[in-house]
Length: 60
Image (tube, rainbow, N blue to C red):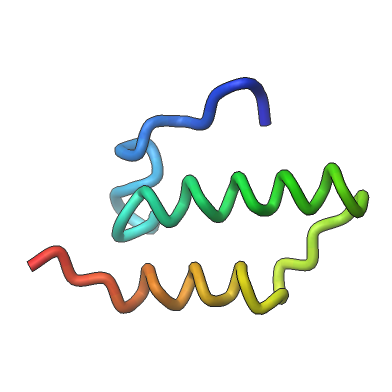
């Protein structure tokens, strides 16, 4: 992933995350899982919860 995660705005937009902070968190957690276990289980409860929370996000 590198030393820095992309800016929040890079995650938002057409087909992206509603709130880029969720995308940033998702990528950081997935990277940590990959480093620790060698693989990422994209169906794990934590990553699924982040996706669900983004779907429920309403900025207004």
